[in-house]
Image (tube, rainbow, N blue to C red; front, side, top):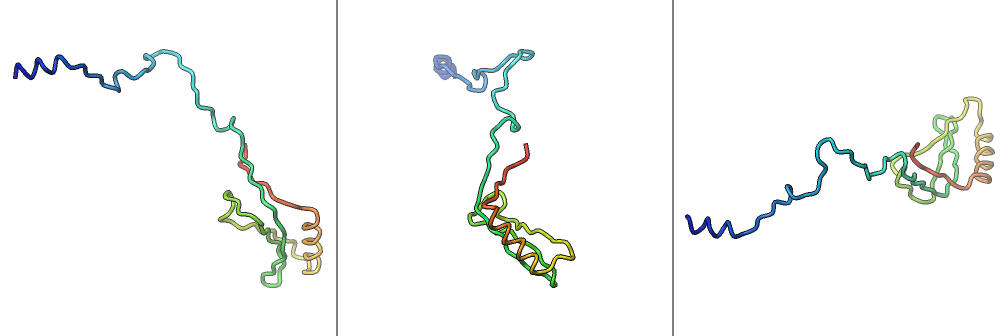
Length: 110
């Protein structure tokens, strides 16, 4: 046992958790990780078109994306119209929207 003790004392042991740099308690430190609200917001875009859909003879407008957008790929977007809007008026509205709206941009609120 004495021989083993002599061999162990000749070895240098370093415990990483003890030797790791760290601030002493009460020391002021600087936070290096940016807060999420200061990071650049990721904007995802896709081309889109609008289509008229009728449910129980009530027209609605659906948003159809040309490309997959990960932020909203599991949801569908539909616009409900006023009860007095006819199918012909809805088609006219969709045609006007498709002529003037070229895409959709999705991003988280800041």
